[in-house]
Structures are given as C-alpha cells and as structure tokens.
Length: 197
Picture 1: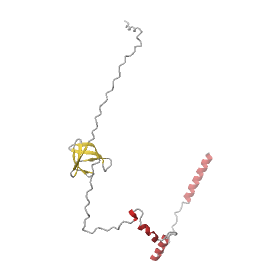
Picture 2: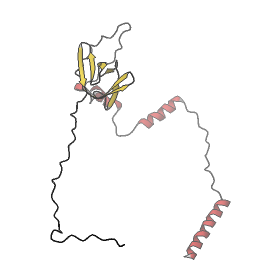
Picture 3: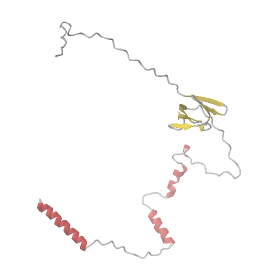
Picture 4: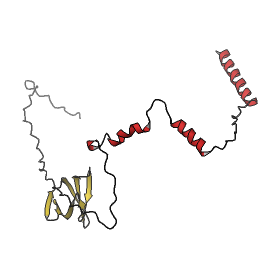
C-alpha cells in the first residue's frame, strides 16, 4: 500500500514540475485583415445564408396570413384606424354591479377609527377597509359594531357580522357513588399501639 501512495506522490510531483517549467501557452489568435466588401456582395452573402434547400418560396406562405388559425372565422382583424383628433370616444355606460359577494369577518376599533375586515369579492384573502373606501363597485358608508353598510347610488346593502351561537360549557356528569366493599369486614379491628413509658 505504501508503494502505491509513493508512486502517486512521485507522479503528482513530476506533473507539477513539468507544468512549472513548461506552463500552458495562451492560444494565438490570428489577426487577419477583414477585406472591405461592397454592399452588393454583403447582400448576396446574406441571401445565400437565408436560402435553405427544400422549402417553397415566401409567396407560398401568404394564405397563412390571409386565413390566420387563431382568429374568429379565419379572417385577419381589421386594420387599426386611429380616431381623428378632437373627437372623444363614446362614454361606455357603467356596468351593473351585483350584490356584494363579501363576508364581514370582524370590526376593528382603534381609537376613533373603525375598520372592517372583509373576505371574498374580487380580491382573494382578507382585506381591511374604512369608511369612504370603494370595494368592488360599492362605497363603504358606515361601519357599526355588528354591521357594514355599503351603498351603490340608490342601492344600500348591509353585511352583518357573523353571529355564532354561544358555546355553552358542558357540565361533567358526576359519577354515581358506589359503596366500597370492605374486605376486612369479618376480621377484628387491630388494637391501637400503646406508647412505652
């Protein structure tokens, strides 16, 4: 085993000495003067690079652009025409906002400020809202101790704080008293010990 380690050490030392005396040389980059080519020669070179054998000419692919696969009725969309300056786009009517799909989780009172924790609606998770804030198209008008009042123009909705039934503690049922059996019933009681004078 010692001979093996000695052989490995000698080989390693020999390799390190060889690298010390003959370090690796960086590769030599041949600097060739780039010949100036005219624009026609460059275009001819690029055209020859673009040509790949076996494919039809570019005009053969025009039907793909005329009948795009992912558009309705396989027709391209109409070209974009910008609106003339000075004309305003017609005002879109506000879409109807349905009943709020939120759940009131808690009412938080910090000093004189009141916040409500709501869950659901358009945003995932819980969020904290205050009076005057707009939530899913509804404006918060009032926060009471047990409800949140939302308004949307002439409509008003109330979200009640969930009212859980109080949990009544269950009294443990006492176990029936069972008279213990006396195992020493037939034996005489032991005599008390008399202290020595």
